[in-house]
Image (tube, rainbow, N blue to C red):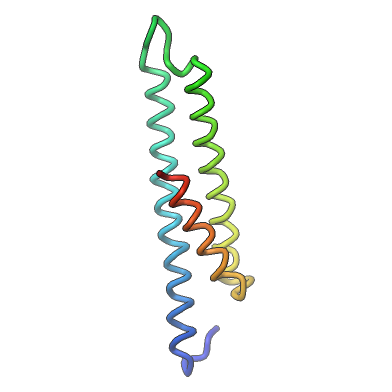
Length: 105
């Protein structure tokens, strides 16, 4: 959709698409880490009870889930913007990647 005569714009678009792809990969890793953490909370027993039953653990798991779902929403919009709203792609690809960086840590 970009003219071949504008290599700088083409490069920026490719970088934005790469940001979306890296965010998707990172989101998959974050969801995998969440699944492992939830399973650990179910399996690990402390004081005669699985640690997943403790309120403090539940809150942390809920925060992790909300963060991954928020990244997913931002990522879906950025991926949609690749074809449907190319003028919005740079902003939303960067937002999704930045939020993943905060959420995944």
